[in-house]
Picture 1 (cartoon, rainbow, N blue to C red):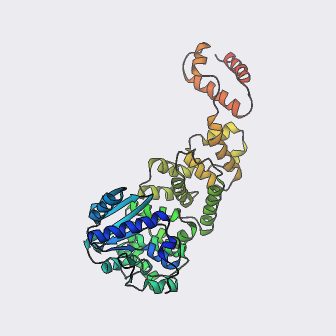
Picture 2 (cartoon, rainbow, N blue to C red):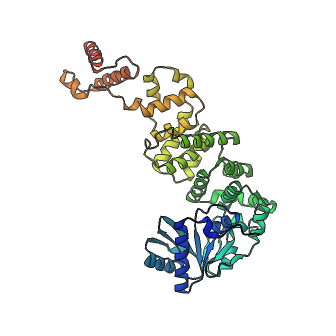
Picture 3 (cartoon, rainbow, N blue to C red):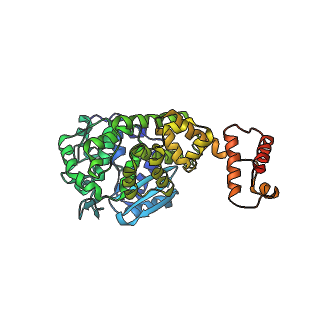
Length: 422
């Protein structure tokens, strides 16, 4: 295929610095180094390059230490797979030891042994990622006709056991097909079916990682719809929303993120973490407690997200009719839900009255408290006990419902309530 433009034209200044730093260390250490995978694929497609990954024929950990010594930054070694991560100039890049892999059983992590770059490319997921650029002489290495599949716009697995050995490749097939607008090659599609019985054997951490990569895609509904079409969720017994609901939910999320219509700092999470949380919310909202429980039993969520998702069953089934009542009643219904749960409900509930109530509960209602305190009640001669909570709750409800609007109004209402106390 015709290479559309030089690699440097698609790299940021920081990325170009990283490539030259790796090239220099490779020459100094006499260790062949290669740019591999998605960066090479995207270069050949003329797409923006987001991530840089490198493979070396040698010890990747020692190579990365040499990088950090010569060019600064920080490195983290991953001994099991002889890989390392180098962070410098605002870039985080992975450096792997070129290796061959064997799988002892389906869905297990592989056993790895050092190998040549051609062997390393043959272990990869798809032909369009089995590509390498030798940094020494800018030679393109393509052992699986990845360039041909780029021209044919096909996602093709490398062998029949691909999705049995590693069922997470099914999630990546959907993600790449949707992102690149490629078709999944017919034989590869049949091989996906062979991998479906092994999806349930994956650890929750691995499934979480790949699904959350989908959630932060530009259009997450498309790969999720492919996974539904292929029967991935059905294979593990988890119900999911219809395609039209998924599309509508992620479209709403995109609109909210663009408009910044919610105070994202309110739930105490970063924007990226909120996008991932919203992905899970889109998958489970209004599907019943069984579906939520299946995900919670499998996926290692943070405590905050786990609790929010667990509460969505109750939140989604609250009757819309209840949200026509006074604000105090609406706030009472919503008071037990976290800010994250309210945000997910506000995103995905279809009833505008409930949406408005969830917004107001988080942004206004739960911040309203009476001027009166327990100390005030004690000073007025009321003995401590359950009556304190009843009176303070009654005063708060009066503020919520507009029954009182000033501290003076509250004082008069308190006088009335105390006069009725036996």
